Length: 275
Image (cartoon, rainbow, N blue to C red; front, side):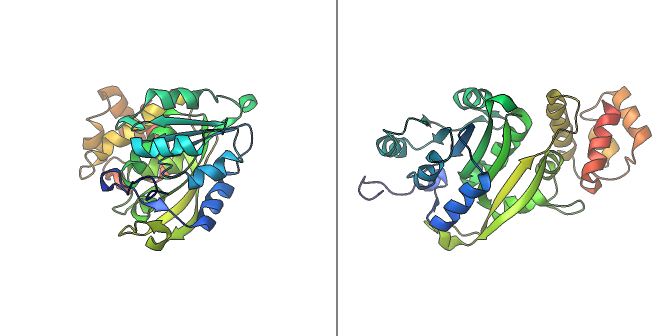
């Protein structure tokens, strides 16, 4: 398909197209789509996965940075009434999703109106900030199913007291149950990457926080502490909490430890103590 259009994969966009049809079907099945779902696909490429999503979801929003691929996709899905193609970088900045996509997601705001889901073969370089942004800023997104490089998968599922454990681990595990759907070798992609990949399913849990703004504040607290992960909690949190809040935290938690030593539940308790 690329050859017919005079195109080739672009390294600067991190393009490694998933070419294993069985894995595509497994990804779609794990998303458990229905007509009342909007599904977000980031990096649709030539549309192989998109073709499966269109048959299951009420609406498919595809975000592709490559203008040439958008033209190809537009031709392929011109008769599909439930497909919206958006050209551009889904990340307006590291912590902000592009407004056009944010508007599409926020249309699906409650049980009576369905929900939004992510189903995608994610470009490697944007996986971490995208997953973080969807979890922190969009309660409409109730399930995330995606392929990602194995290293990022390890960070999402990491346990305390290891190098991989950090803000992504804590925020993802606080808000979701996480399952490894498949482990994927380089042969399942074209061109072949130099790393292994995993397919993950993340189901958003009932929130442990009083309201959604607390999720944003929790994420800011964790990110701020890990910017100084070599310091003790007392020293790291001094950069992100005022003195009264820091005093409450010091009275409720052992702040002589480092950020990576706290369990998920301890992070939630620390946040509540400082709130």
